[in-house]
Image (cartoon, rainbow over all chains, first blue to last red; front, side, top):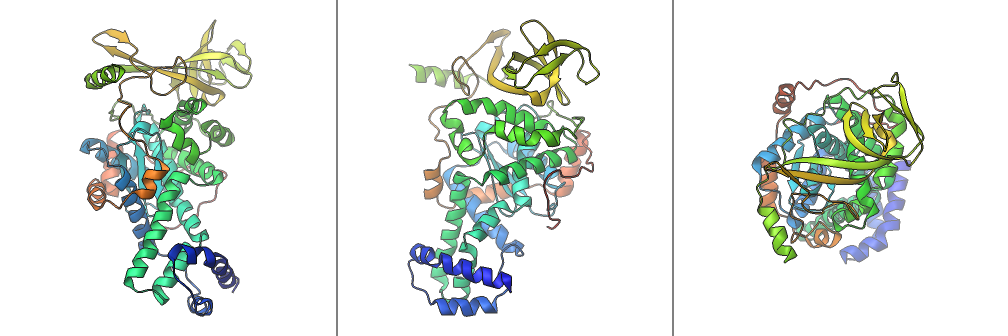
Length: 274
Length: 171
C-alpha cells in the first residue's frame, strides 16, 4: 500500500513536468485509477524492458560516435568483458561491449548490459587487467541498476508506461519512449551521483579479483588518469563531469583494498594495443 | 604547419615500443622499503609530497625512485603527477607529442585533432543508429567462449566477497 501511495505521489508531483515534456493534457483521476489497478508497476522486474531501454540509449550513443572499426579489438574487449561480467550476479545478461571512436577519456554503461569505453581511455590502458577493471566498474553500474533507478525516480518510466497503457495511441507512445531514451542518453553525459560511482568502484575491484586479475588494476587506472584532472583538457572534461575525481575515488577505495594481496594477474603480453 | 606535423606523426607505423615514465609523489608519510612487502627493511623515510618516479609495479606495491634511493612503497600511497610516454623508434628514443598532462608532460602516438569528443550536445542531438547497434551485437561473446578465453591466459575465477556494498542477487 505504501508503494502504491508513493507511486501516486511521485506521479502527481511529476505530472506538471511531464505534461510539459509530452505536450498533452492529462486526467489525473484516470491516472490514479490506473495506478490502483497496476500496483506492481515497476520496470526493475522486467528484464525485457530494461534491455529495450538500454539498447535504445546505446543506439543514441552510437548515433553520436561510431564503434572503432577494428574487429579484433572489439572481439577482444568482448571476451574480457564477458569473462568479468560472468563473475557478477547478473552473469546471464546478454552483455555487449564496444570501443567507440572518440578521443574523450570515458566509459559508459546502459541498462541491460551495454558497456562502452572510448578509444581515448583504451589507449591509456597498459594491461588486460586494467581493461577488465574499467569494464568491471561499468558492469557494477548495471549490476546495481544505477541508471534504471534514476530513470524510475524521475517517474518517467512509471509515467511512460502508464500513458502507453492507458491514454496514448501508438504514435504517442513512441514519443514517450523516445523522451525516456533521450533522458537516459543525456544521463550518459551528466553522469550518476558520486555514491553510485564509489559503489561501482568497489564492485569493480571485486569483480576484477573474482575474474583472476590483480585487484589493484582499478586503483592503478585511477592513479594514471588522476593527474589529468589537474588540467582542463577537453579529452577528460566529460569524465570529470560524469565521475568524481580519481583521487577522491582512490581515497574511498583505499580502506577496502587492505583486504587484497594483489596476487592476481595483470596480463600485458596478450593485451591488444591500438 | 603544426597540424601537418601531427598528421605526419599519425602516419608513423604503430610498431614503436612505448614506455611510460610516471612521476608523482607519495601523499602520506611512508617508509621506502627494500622489498615489495611489509617485512622489507627501511631504506628511507619519506615525508608526504616527496617526489618520486615510478619504476615498476608488483602486486600491490610500486618500485619508486626518490632523489637518493630506489625502493618499494604500497601503490595506494602514490599520486601520479605526470605521465610521459617515451617512444622508441628504430632504436632512437624520442618523446613525440603532448597528449594528456599539463606543462612539461608529453605523450605520444595518437592523433588528437579533428575528432570531436563525446559531449553533452552530441548525445542530446544524436539519432539512434541501428547499423552500429547491429555491429555491436555481432561482436557479442558467449559465456563459454569467454571462459575458454580466460583459461588460455591461466585466469581462474575465485570467490571474493564484496566490501562495503550490498549487491542483490538476481539476474
